[in-house]
Length: 451
Image (cartoon, rainbow, N blue to C red; front, side, top):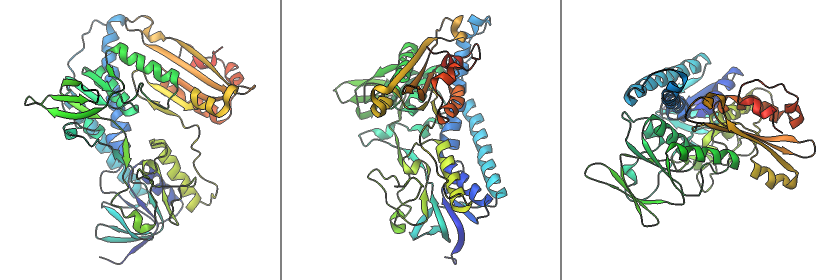
């Protein structure tokens, strides 16, 4: 082992949060090392947001072929080649990996391709090199969680979804969160027969009831089979390679070509010596942090999925940058406000949201809550046989009707939410939206025309 190399900032993990924080710290003049054992970009770039959205676009194109005749195009849907999409998608991701490496190098960050482990207080071994950081960031991310049951290995996780070269004919998905919802919609739109098995009664727990109910209704109407209030207890593979699933009520679902586990994610916090550094984890393995991203060890911080706080790429990026601004940039009050963070579920149709759901608002504010809702069929579907619906919803509080939640489901919902998130953060009242001239014809105009 060589003599320890000393840095102002040592970052463990080359995902979105780690890279953003490392670059911002370097921009402030810090000497920074970043350690990543795998591809740069983390979950989002490699097996998350980016390849998922590319595949979602393919699913949207498939829907376009179905609507083409209604718009005067006498075309039939051509065969879909998942292998061709995968090759193009993988090439794009590889370009992003290279771009991350180039931007880190141009920022002056030393990148080490190695497995990192704490050996003591802010001391780290990365391959055959020893590092000492005046400050250390843990940004090691998360990985898909797999169940502990007989035959679980016959299924794949969301990472495995991106390794598929052929589209399976019959797919079983287990889970009710945003990953399961998104993958179910993608598989179905591309041509698979999909069965989604839910532990609970409904999809997307924690999202606004009006929004999630429309997503669930649209999924059922499209032909996705939902099996609520059931758990898989065993998986068996036939000699033909088809999979049969035993449920906890004694019944079997049989003859699947592919099984996808989408039952949540767990932190990558084991095997990196957090105990040696004095960093405490909770019962689920997430690193405990305060509002400043500070762990239980002095000058050791954590951001992103490993903390279990809003596992969203832009959240990790924002938290990492604000941390670097505070520690190295002379901004002692810089920290991320985790309230009113917008997000999108790329379902079919997409669901976009910012702020409080109706349920959460009523729990916090009681009878002071008033909601405004509009439902309908969007103009795109005005002449199509398929009648895609939308819903928009405002959640307001108090006599001045301050907007504390905006929720939208429908074509274009993913693109409208960013602007409304700004309005919520600025404390907009419903009267402010009412006074805004609508952009017609769009989905977003429905939010300024609510009565």
